[in-house]
Length: 217
Image (cartoon, rainbow, N blue to C red; front, side, top):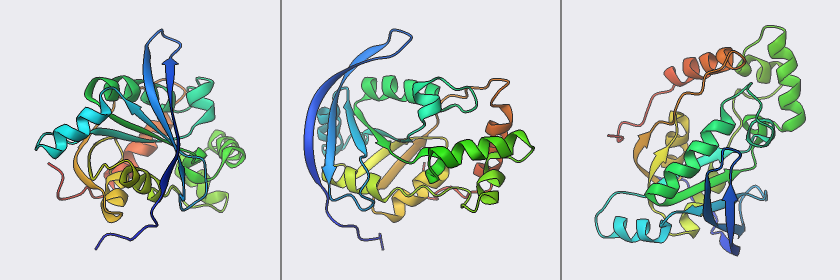
């Protein structure tokens, strides 16, 4: 049985034009929320014909494309190459705008441990630990992200089922437990650089140890 969550409500919605450093631009409908379980200021970006995508699913079509994207100040804003977060965000916005759906921007820096702790983890990685080992060495879990707010946001927006844009099977597992039907998980691109090769190898190794949802097709 799916985990029961409190009902959240839309607090504000506003249209915002977006433009990325490479020149790509689009328009998003931004939603803020009241009643999210962790009290953080998460955002939903409605991209492309998101309302039409919901209507098409209700009429028997494919589920809206959705990416839960965890905040990464260093990668998303400053273009750090120690991770692949910035390029994944850029790719996700364009793909969702084309298909119609939502990007959920979740305030879970450093896989949930916070910005300062993430930078502490970088120092440990420079000393030889991988990204998961570094979190544990700091007294945190390997990955402390919780997708309960994402499930609340989707429920509030009337999104019962999604096509999940992610390389991480754990997102699908959590969302399924939280009552979101993941029809399919589709991968993002691979953004490899000399600076993030070890980071991506660690993520691939951990993902290989995570069983995927049997219901995915």
